[in-house]
Length: 200
Image (cartoon, rainbow, N blue to C red; front, top):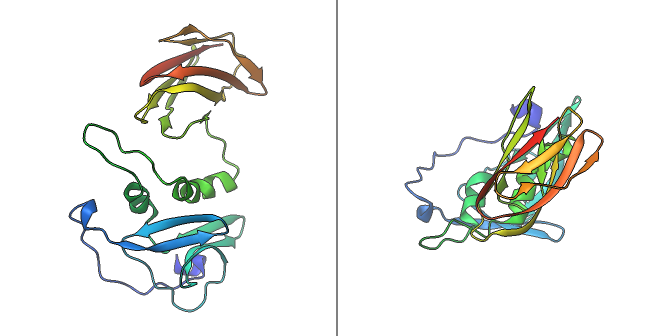
């Protein structure tokens, strides 16, 4: 992996994390106008990074390094993006975590987006989960709203391998839809949970 990354990272002492409160701030990272705080341990890169630096810390050291290898790309985070994403959120008793960093979320999903991967379902709002189940009789998408507030207008682009005859919400009933090339677009309000059923 070190050869593919073009980076050598010396071993560091393992960090035992009893809880999120014990994780210390590491420092700000920046790429142009995008800035976010990293938390937890940080890699020390041995030698020079042979790829492009996607983001750097305040002291100029690399935070994210990207390198083309063959037909693919290797992306190396010198910090812990998942843990930092959780730490970026706000918490209050009786509420779901909210206010997650959109910058860290962008950096986490960037390798998938840059690879041209199309998700089965694209949602216009963050923090809405959209697991899909498909069969010969149609497709069902469960909508799970992990925001604390209802979404007044959620726009969905749903990719299905058939021509769509009908789209129905379990909560709101039949939905108007627009069909495109192997995709259907619908919009609806979402409180906490709903199921969209698409019939071919």
